[in-house]
Length: 218
Image (tube, rainbow, N blue to C red):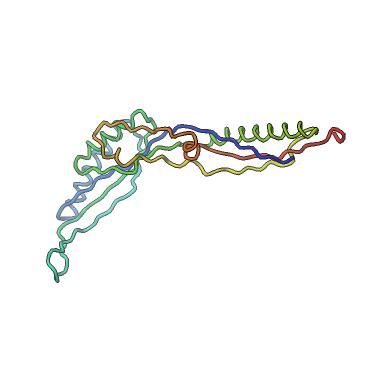
């Protein structure tokens, strides 16, 4: 008898992430960098005041770009200023404080603050995968026992066990319109329907190959 079993475990997100940065424009690189640095320091200070550990604040982007004046046809473009972008990725491990952490960081950055890539995920899926394996083995064994009973044979030990895992859970991104809402708007890692949530937030595992022996040969 050859059977396969599937185990599936569903869990709500336990960790939030967002990118927050500052964008400054000045006539010189030095001035633009100084302005961006002040705003970035204010943002990072706000994050730390709200309990975000330094290891959960990671720089993801720093760029300096010239701005050109193209207003005179036929002339070469003229540099009129510089833009500096500085972005960090923030990991929030206490979802109850997510909105406050985000709003305070934006307020600290002022008009120079920029936010994007708000998302929710499960930090450690190993425990979920272990539970899915156990469920898959139970499912396979139950099927094998039923088939053995219906076939009038005795179920023996497994001949072989193999595992096929589905892709891990994908991050659940916040809808763009929520990012544009006013300060202190609650951001919730919402559950989907069972099928959608399973495909996005669950871990699946397939297992099984079971041997059936006849009563005479047992």
